[in-house]
View 1 (cartoon, rainbow, N blue to C red):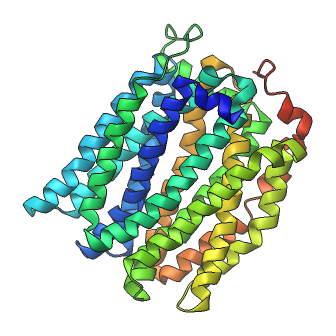
View 2: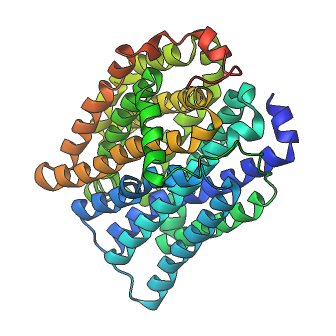
Length: 415
């Protein structure tokens, strides 16, 4: 299945574009807050706001973006998003070299990159089912998520070294170039013939139809609630790590990069295992059991310190991100399987509004808690939410989505 997909020029081009772009994105994931802390002297509140701005744009643009993507062809949207993100990120090293870089510019950059990522991801998730067919969604998503996780490992590890050797602005320049690479490869991705678009509907009723579809499907509601809890928890645990690891504990930048790279390795391992777990248990049952088994590891992350506690916290981070890798394959495939083609953009945008909104809220809460009660208080809050994030699946019909539901994805999707 994997070999067949890579032999197809369209999917291969999408795969290569996404891989290199993700490598650069993970470099900036580490380099942008490091730049704020080491060059501009940002504190916990400023770093938290910087993280939140990259995702809070979804709250404003998420639903209109989904309706818009369902009206237009998706490949041009992805190319335009790559070019915009490249231009915005190039402004950072230019401003640094000119001597007028400030936190205000970094806030604008984070917001615009978040908007570009929203448009790209909504279009990409909507393009994949038509590109590979619904019967191969899990195989395609396993490859895309697994490669993304591999780029997490490489990108975050490279970022720590690159930021220490060449400086954070140079690392951000690498990300800008990666988006240009992605745009070049996307020109080889064919655009599947779309279903009749709901373009004649006014925008607001079209958006409302998408929201009602998601909240009218109990499976999608279960996916949304558990994902929102996990996304709220992760920034609470991770946004202030540059402050804790580099500033308070005195570790060099490469240690932060290595710690975050462990998370990429966890996602990679989870995504590689997801196909087998789905075949054995089904998407909902598999996601529930893996989440339940990994939840206790969250309580080790706030123990991060010098010596052995650094390695224990890193091991716990691997376990938690393993769960993320499993869920990103199983539950994204399930979302695509139960959603009709002409609703994919709106379903994806509504889901991202919930998931990325929770991620942005987590960043804001991390900064607020860090300022009021300290960095470790933020980590403990995130650990508590993460340890309970399996409960929505337990209370949802999603828990009963076993192997039969998993293997029936090629049939007509439920409306």
